[in-house]
Length: 312
Length: 308
Image (cartoon, rainbow over all chains, first blue to last red; front, side, top):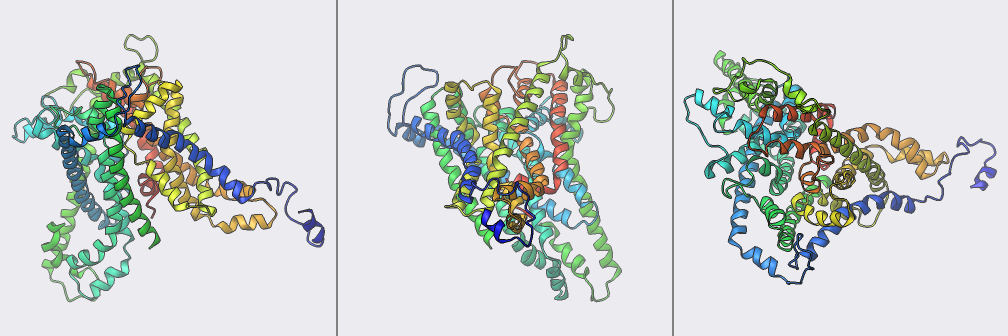
């Protein structure tokens, strides 16, 4: 670098003497130096634990026993995949995911559509609607557990003043899962709404103008302009929510603890019971690995689709 | 949506210009529809916000009014006793366990956010600027770690922390929260870095600066608003986190606020006034912070994957 300075005497270099202080940091080194700490933390706390769980899933290890674990091959996996209990939990989870995400999508999109048609107060409305989404599941679970209480809950109180009888929201097998779906819907409808709204406001105005010159009906405009343009973004939101709903644990824990009976026990909650109440660590690990596989498949769909969307 | 179909055909077809003359009936149906929509939005707003308002009211009510049947929605005596109970022991002997848990939450959320930012921002810049082997795969791999079910991850983490002596320590929580916020930080920040033209750095390098200095002196200052927004989201995520907190900590001196608040409903009698007050104290900073970053909410809640 000294040579450049000698060969360019006419124009005094604007670069201060401090320049090139970190010359030894070539692009390659810089990239490695910047990326590797982050990857190291992820390997240490995300990948290594999963590999450990994978190992444990082939053993009969228990976290409370001091004796070592012995290798049991695929027994844990076979037990889980043939277990009627697990199948029952899978059905509960499926009903919950489809019910909650379905409801959120319809409501979220409807609200976004209504908001997008307003000109004034759009920002304030959106901000207000987003409040539930930002709250911790703990807070949401507690709010609703209190409000849905059979005796002194405000929901029954309001229903009572409208002439309805008391509903045992969280303490009856039939209604508990429904309550869980409703509470999740309350919290996460704003998420779908937010993303749908982002899609709706991005639809170019001239398309609507062209359509109205053609005297297209509003249904036609909705069906052929709005929906196709918003759909990809909406799908991203739906897939994201589906993954989140599949993993859900905290809301169940606070709201119903899986009860009454096992009516709201999702797969996540069941894993917790096997791992931390039954201390069947080996079985729980196999269970966990199977759930991770489901999540990976779902996440792959999501990421692939996302990538397609970004590159187009 | 189907609800609107029959109305829509008549009402909005003429919203544009160049229309046939509109009869008074048509116009009336148009305004009627507008009113229906406004009423619907107002109703939704009430349903969305009622639980929050109700919790606020509960936190301000006297003990007996909390359980009143029928519920007292408008007329009740206001008291701040529950808020006092959140911070001070009932018998007046110093700070309460809840107050300690709030302090722990501040430490854990703050430090983990700092750590995630320190590791995530340079990584995001490097991913944005340099060619790397299988860069896309690396990025998608990073994001997919965020999708792991926490209940599953916590099993091996629990065993690992037990061996390392990290169980029931703030450091353990800080590390796991940093790891959990890192994918988000990298994705979100990469978006912000992509928006800063690489030409700035190239120009700085023509001036004789090294690549690192170009990043440090030219790009980093431009990234500050993005870093702030990203950090606020990471702060909210760590602040709200519950699953790791409840399984990896057990003593009152280490526990963060979410498990501490959840612990209030463990006993035989539940003091809902206190639960409501602590939930309000817990939620207030989140709502304030969320309001500050409302411009970036779409990117924030989709972990930086969707940007407008």
